[in-house]
Image 1 (cartoon, rainbow, N blue to C red):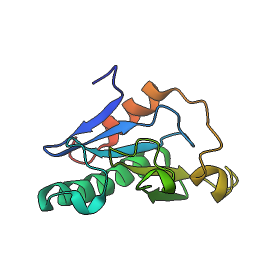
Image 2 (cartoon, helix red, strand yellow):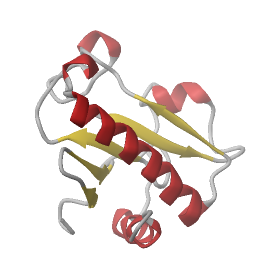
Image 3 (spheres, rainbow, N blue to C red):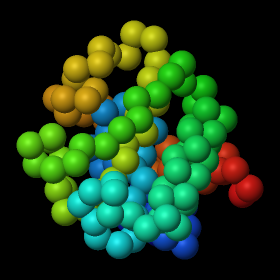
Length: 129
């Protein structure tokens, strides 16, 4: 998991650092099963997907105290999905003055961060860890 930048593994979904983060701490919630649409998740996958989103926000808040978050997913190439066949949800921590909304969601800005350092902090602050 160290080399794959995995933060947390659940039964149906996992949390991984974004390799090209829009802001420090940018994580992705991903189901193990390859689906392209949110409505294709099973009930069990949907529950864990939601629970990991909540846990990710808690860990990011505890580890880096952002002022807010952008949370979302792009379904289909026309909507901007970079990996259209594998649904994933972005959680992007935000701070006052970091950027405006369009570069963050429009994927026009990458921020250099030490992904492994951020990953370790998130694991340390993961709820129940």
